[in-house]
Length: 450
Image (cartoon, helix red, strand yellow):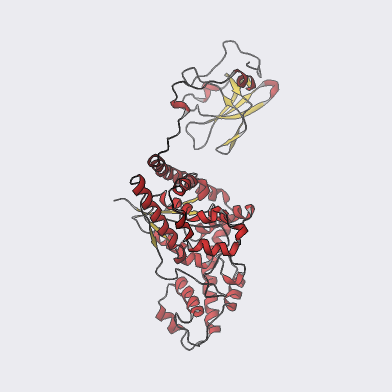
């Protein structure tokens, strides 16, 4: 039986909060334990560009959020982690869906209206209005079954369903209709300084939220200043939203039942409750901060996780995109290798090539690559260079050392497996077979082929 695919993401538009953890990330971590579930979690950096932003901050926060995912328990062995902009299919599918989505649907979106008021008319971009279509592309590309979201995002998942349904009706069955899934408790954690508003990672006041990287002193100060309601009893009461919000945070980070919590604080006041809550939050966040610090010192590992995640995401997304392109009437690109008449290099372009004869001095295997050698090429008075060549499956090192070969030298350096390759060996015959071109009579090293 096919696994149920779960997908969700977070914008790098501010500091990830305990509300983000309770409403989303904690649910992702739980999903990892389900054997019938395939998890896809990403950072939606393209969405962060729909309102005014700073490019350097966007880069910083994008990596920060990935590291917080990992620090919170998202396991790359169980979940696919990637960055939205690393998968070009997201933007291409958005355009296809744009052309099949009525603008009236966008005008009805609540978040567009709310964000438009916040940024002002001069800063309302086309992207901000189009945000739900990009989000629909995010979801539909991966044939998603479930999208774990907070209450404020349910409308976006519903519009993704409508867009999929309309496209399928117009062009044939293409997309799976996703379903929004809310956590059982704490789907909407409210602001510490205003329980009428949702806790926001982009709030102007730091007393609005608890950041997942806050220090112990910050946490104690923020909870100490959190607003409270009238009344004395520490009980879950929806009519006392400020206290109810604090109790909801307490319940979600401890996992305790409501009655157990109410019994613990029976006869106690706000001061004692807040002090206890602050310490519980400190104990909860400290391991996340410590793990984040370890990851920050090991960026190579984080980059490897993202590279593997993007490769897998591109593989799946490209298949869905190809199907959508075909259904929508677009012709697939023609590839040069498929042409009956092969392209040829012009005489002018040939004159620009810098091809020198060099001698292979050393041959080294490239770790983890069964087709690559690192070749050290000697050009005599013109010095040496190192190139990476995929000829390992054809030759042993002793077959290569001492051989003279033509090298295309004026290529831009390219990093392959952590090694700077500066040039390319020209070692193929007219039929494309791999051979070595060793002159019958040795020539002066560095000689130019013209």
